[in-house]
Image (cartoon, rainbow, N blue to C red; front, top):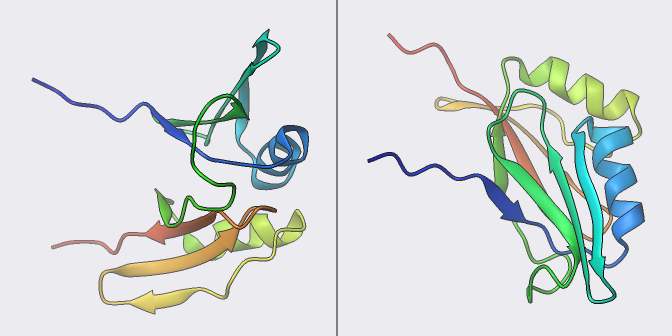
Length: 123
């Protein structure tokens, strides 16, 4: 039996600001933006090539904005990923090289944090 993570909630204060950050600056795909009713807005965004999306909105989660810490995305090249972020105005860390991968870290406007990991070639 396969168990697949499909959707991760990211708590934000301003849905439109967060959506613009993730789509226009980070480069996520804008999948859905539906105002279901006055208490529920569902915004689904997906990193390029990912089978797992994030959801922003109102009425989505009880987590405090900025409390989603350490979501990790695997990228083919950490230097290129960092350059993409910086070129689009994202404050990204320098590439940190470890034995288990190269990492770039950034946060969204609410302080939710992300790590991009380039996995080293395994022999």
